[in-house]
Image 1: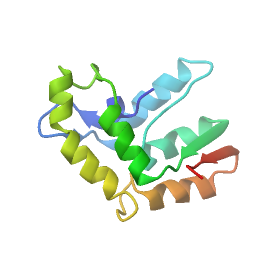
Image 2: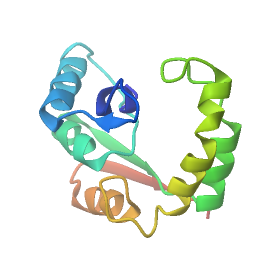
Image 3: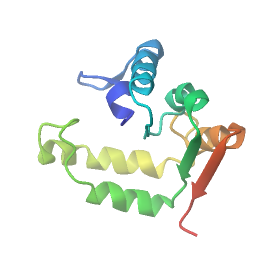
Length: 129
């Protein structure tokens, strides 16, 4: 499950869904799959899934690596009507990624580290080191 699909309303400009609405989607997904993987950077949503999980994997990569991955990502047709439409958001995405260590929102490094440290199940952190 890509959390982007549960986090955002299908409107322009982008607007987050209410947390309760996203929670219903997460619980429905978990209940309908005997095994599952949820991917995303929204700590507020990951915290909803964490009690049902057996493991978390934190990709704590260098900012440069994340930016390179964003620049090289394939078209995501479930999010954008075309590769060109996706690429129009690339500058904004790169700027957002660059701010990761300094932000204090639900998608920040601080929020991710806090969730990782509090998680009591099996966990892995992968870095570029």
